[in-house]
Length: 211
Image (cartoon, rainbow, N blue to C red; front, side):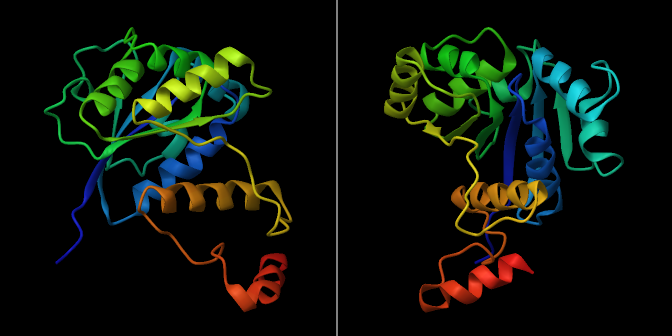
């Protein structure tokens, strides 16, 4: 039986590292297992994108992230509380927030839904859909840790934007690629076995990562 194609919500918030969102979104856009992507970029996320990508915060976030290759992606305004991702009856696999600011995680943990990102996350929790929060900030204080516990107890997943080092990355680009591969593999969209544990092939795997 063919695997069911997915609708996925991707949110970008005002925590540095919006280039990771580009890697994730562009990979989803190319993946034949993904039917559609709903993209929500917060106002703070737009500011960060303007800083990290150049241009203006008024630029179209989809065009900035994907250029012309946007046929799968619908962009929603963060204050549009009538947008499709606000409804539990809207067919969606779940949601990935990358990067996820700790303030956004805090409001999700407390059940606040003042923006489309927070409401879409709340819908994922109430509908028992997967919610993955790729937090970036560090260090964590006790409030952050308690909020992470609360989100986890509610069914969400805290997935920090932490690169691996065992594969001896040779560039920042490799670190972005590796994180994207692990993240999408984690949500059931395996990309490649490039970073997979290979048992007795560990040394060969490491040598491959150096080429």
